[in-house]
Length: 399
Image 1 (cartoon, rainbow, N blue to C red):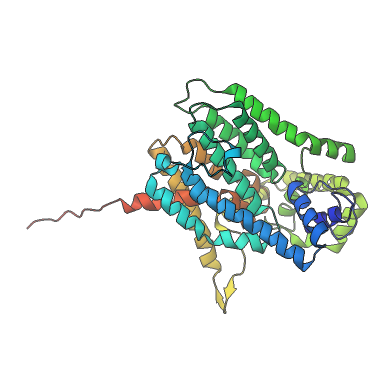
Image 2: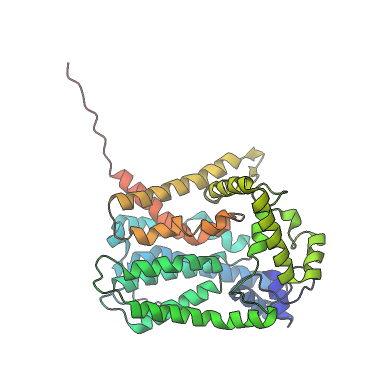
């Protein structure tokens, strides 16, 4: 992210994602690097002032995300569009319809003190906080539009614009768009699905992607929807030297020899080479690939192996346990929603079942899970609240 931003600030455009000059790039979605590039241009490339501004930017959107996940997901107006967010028209409880007022209140408090709310904005210079904010906003708007007595055309336009921004910030989140639209169109209480509105939304969404797609085609001579680094990520996690996770020593951002190879071939030919190597690995080691994938499913929810030593004490097992319990309680919440036929079950389930699928094939960094953690937290609070209502009665045998 920083290297792309440096190139942008220095007037070289979206290029050179490693230390060496390697020419034009489509390594990541463009929004966040351009935001960083603007900060670098104003406050200096890799300067202390830029560092403060970048971390402040991350933290601000994490705070807004917290407001949406807490108060925003707890209070939604009867007829609201994106333009009304700044106006503060927050009147009705979402969780009062989904889980109840208690879950709404405790979800807000729990998210306010959630550790990753503090950790990610200042730990990595990445789009994790910004994309989590955008996805939470999309979830909020989907519920608002579905609940409104009538949805106006401008609502669908705003929704399409938002998803265009999401796609150009974190491409992986696109996988949730069809499921949110499907839920909005086929709710049990909807008599006539608004297919026209959904078509407008999708048209606006596609239009948002056209300029960047044209840029990629004119630059690389081939169709690249948004980014091109998937072959590298697949190969890094699936090769003879890996254990199913990222082989950092062979990544062009870290290994000087691979970096020079990247510069020599150029980005597109380098990605083509990695694609062939990945395909060869699949053909020759299909069983190993399946084993790697199964392990990554576990690591996505229980965190990849990492030494966690504090004052001489190893908390590695505690770290895995904490991540796993969060996942376990989240899935328990979804299961309970299906058991009780909650009408919102098909809205929340894709966040846990569909969203992680791409990350089962590459390295499952914990920050990749952050966009769905607001939903996970609401489900955890729901399960705990329901468990608190359970009363056990022990039958006494009379003699």
